[in-house]
Image (cartoon, rainbow, N blue to C red):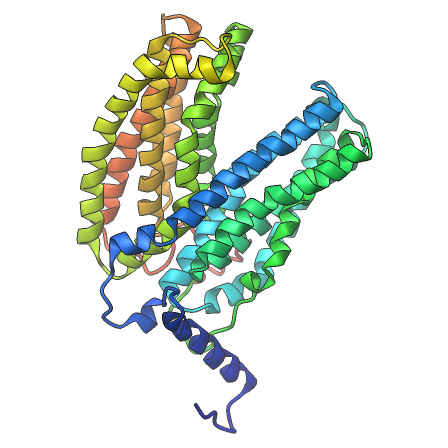
Length: 467
């Protein structure tokens, strides 16, 4: 291909970017909408092509997380490891509020636009916003350092700042990889974060370090994203003004409530049980049961970077019939599967947990059944969330999860059964309520025209400065 001598450097870069996107058709990667022509969308092939790699990356990350925490507790002991536990807890919150939304915003933007111009345009504002946000959260952590970390220094507030920035960075790296169809690299990036933590944790353990160094090792894990520097390099697309989008941080804040509440409902059962007077052995047993049942959910969560571009493609190309079919499948499959999970929980789960984790792990059959059924609903909720986000909407997600949390809290507060049964049933009821409301939200979304811009972002016409 010949380039005219009068072409500007910007035009050359844009042309090279377009060529790179088209070249992906020849190396087995997805091609943007503009380059696909009339190529038929094979739903099953797109969903399962790289699912094994993404699932393996998610499983590896989970195993490595347990390895790191085992290093911490065995090196320091449970009391001294408390500050690291607090930092870890905050990281899970930051992942729900920042990593997940930014990752899927990036994937959706690349898929919907078919070029990298939008991301190139907002990149400087994005990094400025992340820096300001991280510093503000670090300042809050500094004010609360004594009750949170039992430490009067600045080390842990600085680490909170680093974890916040790292959570945003990880979301953008993974989104940049998955949005370009590099699913194997996405899986590697997910696993590499905790692999780096384990490597640094081993060094800290050998050195006989204190909690500050282990916490630093944890905070540095997100630097593994530097192994994929090209994931954050986006070519401008000066000739296309169709992609008018605002700040990804505004998108993240629009989704933050629903994303955070969903994780609270999914993992907060043991905390709620302890708060209302549950026995220590019940709290531990419920934690183990939730962790085991949550394993398939975590695998599904790891596969979402592949599902998001597929759903976005269907939404932006007007393939509502395919999405309505998926909606019907959700109704017909999740409820019966939740029934099967309840049956498995009430019959086989108890003996298996005792065999693996010891005879002290003992829960009523009803509790195990409720946890199993609720987890199946949680997996359905995750897919419905992605269907709604594919259309650029976040409000139905927030409404569903705020309502579900309210119902669950009322169930715990007003229920009559023993504390353990109240919490387990509240978990199942909350997930079920969220499922129904997300089904309704997805149905309404599927019967509305797909917006040309994200509804969760500020309007450029109003002169808003995103971030």
